[in-house]
Length: 367
Image 1 (cartoon, rainbow, N blue to C red):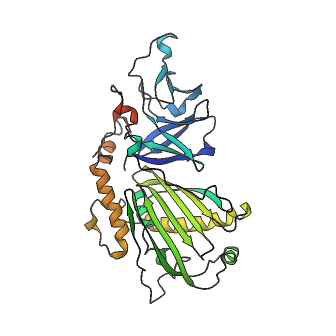
Image 2: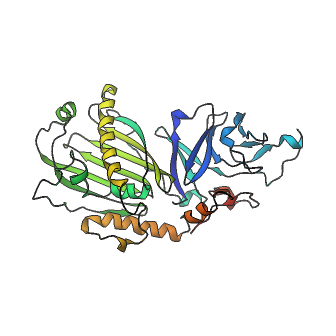
Image 3: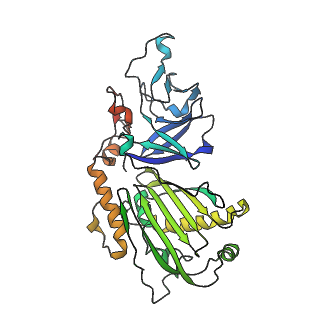
């Protein structure tokens, strides 16, 4: 798992007047809204005696620890220690990690890391989210898979023929050959477009809306952005467009929280949302059923541990970026964390650690 990326912690509608505990990157965080309504994200470990802040309650702009009543504001600064008295001066070391948040597309993104804003991978843009004559839906899945394996699956142009019956012919076409992909690279990702021969949509209303009832060549494209964001464009016809955006958050090494934003320019009546979302769920579970049995469970650290062919170039590039980010010191030493889990609390380093010293909870070990 890697620090220094934006991860989705929760859907905005689920964070109301009570704090929420979320696990990301193997660590626990507390989400709450301050009096202005801004979403806040802090390490869930109280520096006093290890209490879980998320089990506490809101007190103005602060979260109150349920163990001894210490108050921490949205910046992680302790504002009150009841046992010291009402007018007591709060020690400067009384602080916990606070993480930047952004609330867009109905999701709460948290930046889990310490690098400056200008060095961060931006959040993948969902430009169609508020477009006129488009419809957006959001779905959430939680699967027992490695998020990196999931991203690699998303940029694997050859798996559709065998994993998704609606995308191909399940290997029954003897003339099948993966089409070449026009791979595009940038600082934060890899993507490509190609044309695939695919059957018509099986669901009657969606098939009728697409205007295609026969096998045909379909234009599709996909790519990753940063370590855990994915875009997929599917154009059943030149006029019918489906653009999907996936944001994956590692709960831990082998569990992943997946948020899918699906946008479409057809069947835009909200009454058709369930039809579209059901189709998306079927596809997501088809991918899951393959990934839960993959071996090894985690993406290999070395490219030569798997035999690649030309269609695997985007995956090769993704793994090269993983290696690059590891060399920057962004990869968590999960083995050390697991070894010490019963006796040691850690925090994902926040931007505040680059500005001040004297932190009580140790920063998580990095490879």
